[in-house]
Amino acid sequence: LAFYGVMPVIPLIVGQIVSKNIIGFIDNPWFVWYKRMLRKKVIS
Image 1 (cartoon, helix red, strand yellow):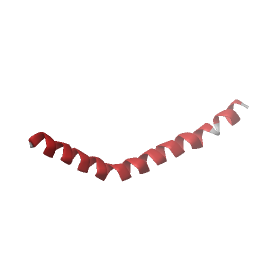
Image 2: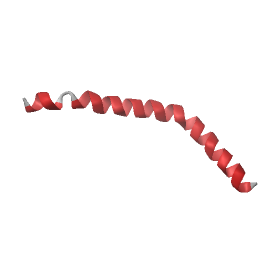
Image 3: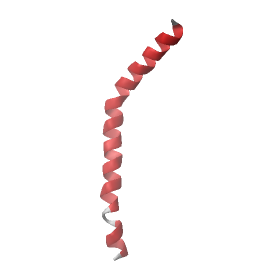
């Protein structure tokens, strides 16, 4: 019964990790571009 209670949590954790990795992969180029824009603003 305790093991059955833990089982639904594992797919949730895996799903969160996968979705975070996908979102991070999509956001990364935008984040790099944003940092470049901030540097240009600081220099100028």
